[in-house]
Length: 371
Image (cartoon, rainbow, N blue to C red; front, side, top):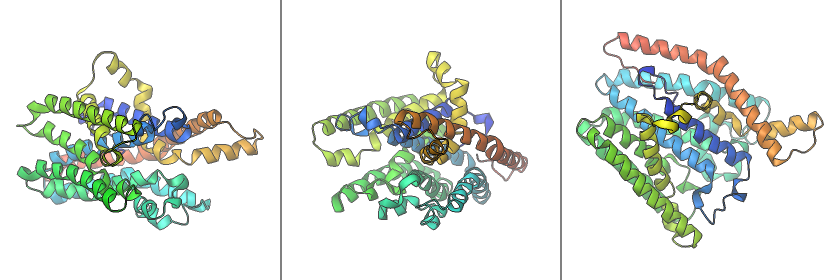
């Protein structure tokens, strides 16, 4: 979810802006009662946090697949080793540091289920025990991403090239069919939303965009593909909104809940990767927005613990009970400050190690640099 975008020769700044927009949607959803503004009877997917998460999934599928496709010309063992080493350096340090702090503070229910979180199985935990989520509810998406990182590189590096697009398309179909299967067997259940297999349509749609961009035969159809994704996705989203507002077709809404918005986000990611022009470009390349995108992993990781922290600090200094708006302002500020400190003092120094690994890989003809 939180690729850092560095292989600077391939750096696409507007993708950082999309990260900033995605994580901002999550903050608004978790810190403000957005359901009081956008009724889910009007628009089922009005939950901004879900839309932010789906945008992250499409981005991850796009970036990871693009990197792995470029690595196919190298030895697959070297590529895998380099990939996992770099992902470990990017993701693990502040994640496990956060778990360590939460356990030392005896944070419940994180401490109770620490082994699930440490193994990146939070999404499975919440399927079986939804009450275990609490402040760590957002960990489910981190688990989805990590599980995706574990399996997807093998497919992208080892499946024969002629079968790769078919593999990606099957992944999209699998994600949709899994949601339909869960709906038909156990109904509207978290098993149809939180497992990685449920998110494959979103992740693999980003992968399909990456494949089309890098395939000599298909790249000329990129513009048409993006236009089709926008039209089909837009129609699906409107259909979902209509069915929800009229209390019809709930099954179709649930099965395609991720698919419609993800198709729209394929267009958005593809357009930002190529670069929007005009005022849109000026806005998407605003330095503040790009900085928020750069530190988005820390923002996402830390944010859900901040409302409780600011309410505690408010009571300590005698501010009394905070209003929703005050909590939003203080929690957002605390999240941004913590993520910025995390970036500059922990993540950025580690990222320099990653860059040295890239240089070493480039100097070895048999190696591949993966970010």
